[in-house]
Image (cartoon, rainbow, N blue to C red; front, side, top):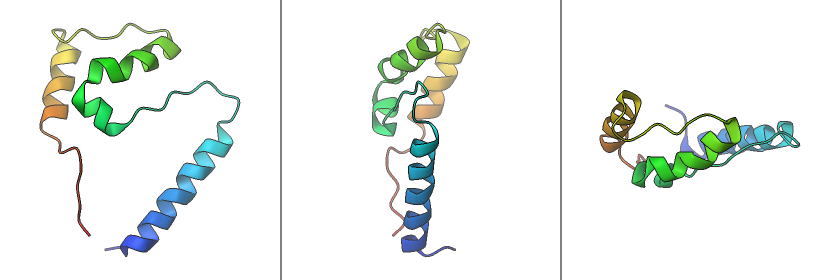
Length: 79
């Protein structure tokens, strides 16, 4: 695999490039922990920005989101 330090450097480089290249474009930042803790609250600003409806928790999409996020760990530590 890739050394952790190199992976972190690449991630930082890509995140800084993404930030630089999207300046002036509307965007919303969502913390992963917030998404896992309460996806409806975390996605509300995203849906507002995109002018799309927020899926209800009982809709097919809401059920799929809840199931997917509930089986994913909020943090992984492979170092």
